[in-house]
Length: 274
Ligand SMILES: O=C(O)c1cc(=O)[nH]c(=O)n1[C@@H]1O[C@H](COP(=O)(O)O)[C@@H](O)[C@H]1O
Image (cartoon, rainbow, N blue to C red):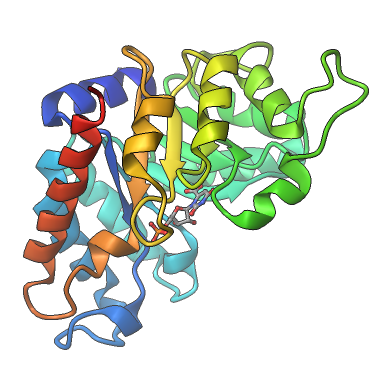
């Protein structure tokens, strides 16, 4: 099954557009695990197991593992998800972007070392920096388009006078992902939940690609406005929340609290479909 079909199947099975972000910070772990980077896998596996039936995807952020020399725990975690929850795909949030020869190594890392189903990429270096990922049949790649942070507009909001129609940079990226760059039909776009107007614009320019939409929860994005702007039947959206779910409780009941917050967010997103 290719990545987009995996997303559609998980969305249907779990009635969910919620992507559970796995951004483990040992200093925020509950007392029994607190400060212990060797317990990153244990913490994340508990979250995965508690939210597996209400997620469209899991999104581990690689920096939270690499910073703690915990790449082996990330490998083990993704293997755990595939073994126990094969119906929920894994998006490796690595935001890679480099010349083709280096991109080949990054693609190998994402899809063979970690066995992720999709990866996040920066499109800043152009098509030849994205192409190596597209050689992996069935794997997905999300291009940063209009990111959730305020500084995203510094570059993404600039107008391209030399491109027909003079689009803003993020609009141009959306058009490339919907059209000429989408060689294997597996490209998606990242658009922040903090900018619903821009989600709507991206959806108009890229009506069929999947959208990864981070920014609900800790960043304060509007879940209802996000779904209204981005959801269309047949074009999946994965709305990510990380810290609000992971750290819903700092006590021993952290996994149950994560589940409650995941269910609450999942239901809010579903209700907004109208
Ligand atoms: O690519 C991403 O996932 C991403 C893009 C973006 O525009 N904004 C954004 O916050 N993210 C990631 O989404 C997650 C958001 O985490 P919370 O703010 O804790 O929900 C982090 O892992 C970010 O790195």
